[in-house]
Length: 375
Image 1 (tube, rainbow, N blue to C red):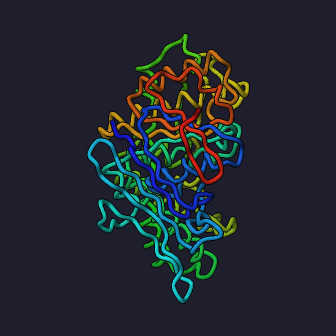
Image 2: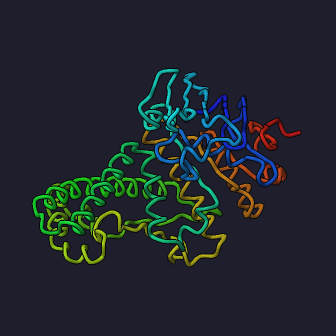
Image 3: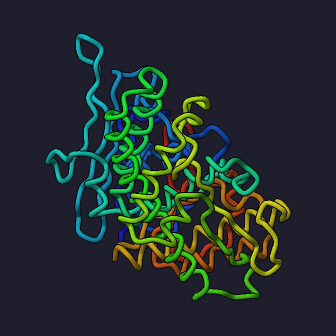
C-alpha cells in the first residue's frame, strides 16, 4: 500500500510549521470550520500533476505573514521515499521558483512524483457536477485520466496552447493558410490523443463499475460515456484517419470559428454523460443524495482503476465526505474504503461522523496551525 508516513509543512496556508506522523490507513481530520483541515488535503494534492484540489496558484498557498515561500514534503511508508514540493521566497526582482524534489534531488515537475504516488480526491465543489456545465465535467474527467496517465496533462496543455494560436491567427491573419494548416495539423494530432486517452479511461472505468456492480449498494453504479464530434471520430476510426477527418473539419469551420472567436469542434467541447443505471435517468435528475452517492461510487471505482493500472494503490482525499450522508451510507462508505487497500484522508467538523471507522484508523484534531491526536 502506498501510504504517507510523515507530512511536513513550512509556511503553507495556515501552518507556520507542522511535522505530522501518520500511522493509520484511514485518517480522519476533525475540527471546526476554518481550522485548516482542507489545507492538509490540498498540501497532499500538490504531489499530483496539475494545480491541486483547489486549482489555486502556488503563490496563493504561501502563509501570510511569512517569507514569501513555502515547502511541503511527505515521507512514504512503503519504500521510504521523500517527496518535496514548494515555492522559493522571492528574489530581488520578485521572482519565485517552483521546487520539486525526490529524495533531495531536483525533479522536473509534479509529474515525476507519479512513479511513487497517485492521488484521487473528492471535494464539496464537485457536489453539483451532474447539473453543472460540460466544462466542469471535462475537468473532472481529465483529473480521472491524469491519475492513470500522468502525461495527459502535458498533452492537454499543448492542445490548449495550439487552440489559442489558431484563434489568434483566425482573428489577426485569417488568410495565412500555411500557418493555419500547420497549427491545425498539430491540433488534430493532440486532439485525437487527448480524446483517445479520455475514451480509454471511460471504457476501463465502465468495466470496473460493472465488475463491482451491486444492486443493493447504497452507492448506485453509474453508466458513463463521452459525447462530442471528436469523441465520435475516435470511437469509429483509426487514430490517423480520425486526425485527417478532424483536420478537414477544422479547415471547413474556419469562417464559423472566426466569427465565434474560438474553435467550436474538438475535445474542448466534449461532455461526460453520467446516468443512474438502476433508475435509467440522467444523473442530474436524481435527488441531491442520489447524486452524491453516484459521485462517491465513481470515485471509489476510479481508485480501484488507478490501483489496477499503476500497481500503486492511490492516496484518496475526501473533503467533508460524511457530513451529508445518512448513517447507512456512512457505514457503507467506511466499509468500502477499508476494502480499497488505499490510505484515505477524510475531513469533517464533527468527530462523531467518524465513530464507525475501523480500529486501524487514526483520528486527528485540527486546530489553527496545529494537528494532534483526537482525545
